[in-house]
Image 1 (cartoon, rainbow, N blue to C red):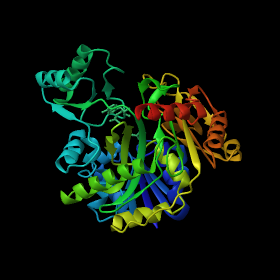
Image 2 (tube, protein in one colour):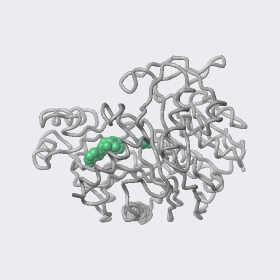
Image 3 (cartoon, rainbow, N blue to C red):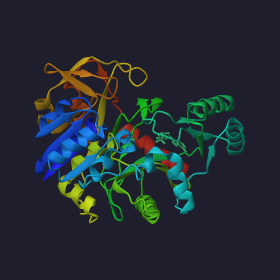
Image 4 (tube, rainbow, N blue to C red):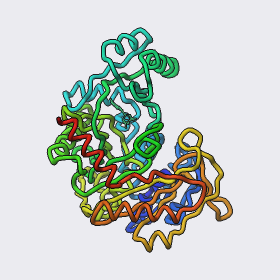
Length: 431
Ligand code: AMP
Ligand code: GLY
């Protein structure tokens, strides 16, 4: 089988590794990625949104299955380029990816189909509406409707310290976008649930907890995600009924999309919050999470190229996963997330990391004359799996010492202390 992967970060690096196990890998990336290029039979460095060039390149290589990975490219319809040529695709068309690139679409779909787990929301179109909504709703989360790389959401009482600050942020977004989404501020523990979908059926991957805040102890600005852990079938603070509730919400969502003649084929990512009133939806994404992809794909036992092919065919092959625990830690350049320094030389000792039983994947880096340099974002990830979370965490932490350069990471991800804090939080919420 010839599999085409579009995108180039750490999430795509593990996708490339899994696909290249059984398929011949072809990849398209905007800038050369040191890991994916080495795994590829052939790669094209070109703007993936240039439909004429990438379409012709894929067609002449007789690709059997294509997968477009990053949100920005899904929103620009890169999957459609291949689908229009009759190439089977396992990622969503632009129209279906709207579940991610338009938060208004996602919320309205939930409301009109009476899908559980939707917080109270208001889409304001002008300053007066935004102000009235804040007065009425109290503490809210303020969000742009479009894609923001996880960094555009501001929460009252966390990032915004007064009603005035909240209203001011609304006006910034209104000026830029002409609308702003206000959501009831939820309190609880977040988890990620990813599922393979074939338009009709879905199959869950193990739940994962990401860490959005930049600094240890969950403080500082939001990031794309500093690292994540998983512990088999459930996270330590979850019960089986929470997983079932989240699964039902995801199934109801793809059912609703199918009814609206917008079937979702791809990886559906549900970000949930476990609150005192049950499981609520924070957002949906139309792709794997980054870093969460590295947790789940590390555990995947079924061949990924075969799963993708079955999704494209509308006959989802149910995957199986090992129930080990996993820990992923991202190493990021000095100055990240506000002003990550680009052009810093970094290196990793793959053999030492391998000897530990861990792995490393390159993120936002570029290669020049055989050396690797940072761009401004998350540079490299280490991943470890083990029968217990403690072992996985300690292996991952040890592995970070073999990634060299002016980088830093959160040491607390997956540690016993942080997990204890999560469990106590949920216990407190439930009274
Ligand atoms: P998003 O980009 O929608 O994933 O939001 C980024 C982060 O903001 C989430 O991971 C949550 O921590 C937080 N957040 C988003 N929506 C809400 C909400 N309604 N209530 C509380 N926190 C939220
Ligand atoms: N880790 C969060 C995301 O991929 O959106």
